[in-house]
Length: 314
Image (cartoon, rainbow, N blue to C red; front, top):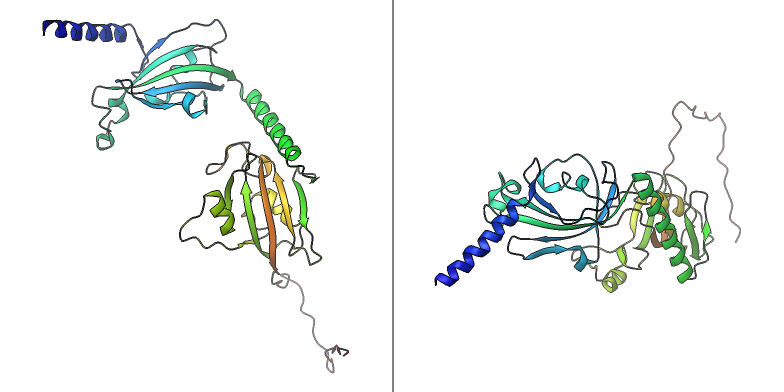
């Protein structure tokens, strides 16, 4: 029994000494830098790319970028709270590694009802971080745009798409022509569509069979052509432009760069700088009801005016 107590006391002493060797940020996080590379320190405004493992005090892994295959990224800005780690990042250079312990008492202050059992009072949320890259915003944006262009070019080549490109950068091919009328701004359109990323993974569709094949079928959703007013601004710019190129009854594939889609911020699971691919069908055009121009004079019928009658030949 004495031997067991001695081991426990030794372990406790090691943990206490380890924590006492750590430094503390002004907001109360403990940190220990394992490496001290000689490169430039991370600066406010930089975009950093990093690997990290998130654990409890008892070494239970909560999240790992190594396991998920998705690295972390953040823009360095003044710290808003102890958990954003913005007090620690500027102490590091590229290739540095650090252990950060964030006190859970700070995380759940005023929200004790949301504290999970694996974070008891007095515990820490541990981060082990390795900095992979630090870039200025301009360099980061340039790299993302180059990667997007390369990815789109590869997709087009792999799928052997013979596309036309508009002045804005929209790429399209009409896969089923039609001789019916084209829409104009103000018309209401009924459009079937299937949207996917450059990985060919479908993220949305109006066609039930496609939703089922992609594992996206939503119970209670009525799968039918989307109704939209062209020119009203309720759709992405790539659609606004592309649909005006089609005739009623035609089908097409649009390859839409992010600048004509969801841009640098992304949207609901669509990552920033994402080129999107849409297979579309312009099912029907409902012409706009044109109203008189304000201030325009209404023609006055003269006495004896007869409406012209068109006689149909049999």
